[in-house]
Amino acid sequence: MRIGLAYDLQTHPQDARQAEFDPPATLDALCGALTELGHDPVRLGSAHELLAHPPAPGGVDLVLSIAEGVSARCREAWVPTLLDLWQVPYVGSDALALALGLDKAASKRLAKAAGLATPPWITLNAVRDLPEQIPLAFPVIVKPRYEGSGMGIDPGAVVSTMTALRARVAWLLEQMREWQRNGAVRSGELTTLLPEPVLIEEFISGGELTVLLVGNDPPRAYPAIQRAVDTASQLASHVSPKAPSLATPLALDAAVEQRARDAALAVFDALGCSDMARVDLRVDAKGAVWFLEINPLPSFDPQGTVGWMAECEGRTYAQLVGDILAAAAQRLARA
Ligand SMILES: Nc1ncnc2c1ncn2[C@@H]1O[C@H](COP(=O)(O)OP(=O)(O)OP(=O)(O)O)[C@@H](O)[C@H]1O
Ligand SMILES: [Mg+2]
Image 1 (cartoon, rainbow, N blue to C red):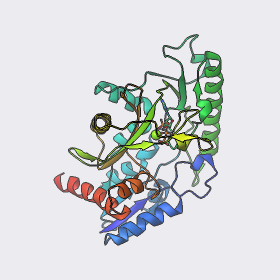
Image 2 (image 1 turned 45 degrees about the horizontal axis):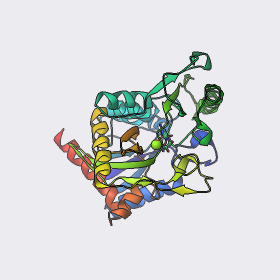
Image 3 (image 1 turned 60 degrees about the vertical axis):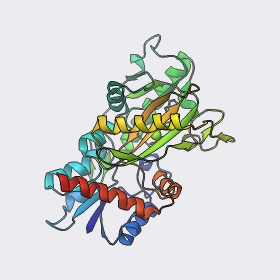
């Protein structure tokens, strides 16, 4: 098959605005995997590039999009929206599931409605909207409502007093305005500047699991991977990179792991995801599993979850990519 690849290329790794973009090495790894699987990869680029150069009819058989887009909570949905418009089949979730997954408050609401535990939360747009007292138990964590890749999250995001909370919310709102200002102009296009809300949620101490899902009706839940956490901040190592001491605090027994997989499957279903997703969960001292977020567009970094999972399963990165393509092909054949 001729498989189109849609992506946002990370050209400046130190630039926070490109934190979610993919480095050339990930693109090369994906193209290598597709070639190894006998396909012909076609680099299509970003949503803006696709819009400027739509694929010719029959030019690609299928598109694999890892394009994150910039600014606004529907940015990950840009490529699937264009592909739906042009009736080009693609791998992965549709626009709605991608937008819901990026919006942490929306996905938490759906997870809660599906009966899952998720840390109690509030969202707000401005420091002045912060009440005298919040209806949450401290400590809480302050996060952007629709970002990923740990943007805006570091040990300072976890606060235990109203004073510290007010200061962190003010800092994060300003930080997000800065990202928006700088990210607003791209490929000659001006995107609308939308205020991005802050999500404040109760902090769950303990361990952390991530579950990769591949397939449909239902997908296969891979074994839960325990992430190392910084022993001081208790944040996962990817958001506390300078941590002097890391630990994997969970006694990962079969019951906890099964709860994590069941929770991941339930959220995948609640959002209407397709083909793949990665679900991040915390596990408290009692072994209860708490839903944090779902990534319907997981990273294809060979050093990331997809690469680890393949290694844990004794398979190659290319074989796992092949499983995801097969899931999409099966789903599309049934449609
Ligand atoms: N409520 C919480 N309780 C405990 N830890 C949390 C909580 N929320 C976030 N964290 C920590 O912060 C990390 C990043 O949070 P989250 O997954 O919500 O953000 P993200 O930017 O979408 O991350 P990524 O895309 O890198 O997984 C988590 O992996 C976890 O270590
Ligand atoms: Mg996460």
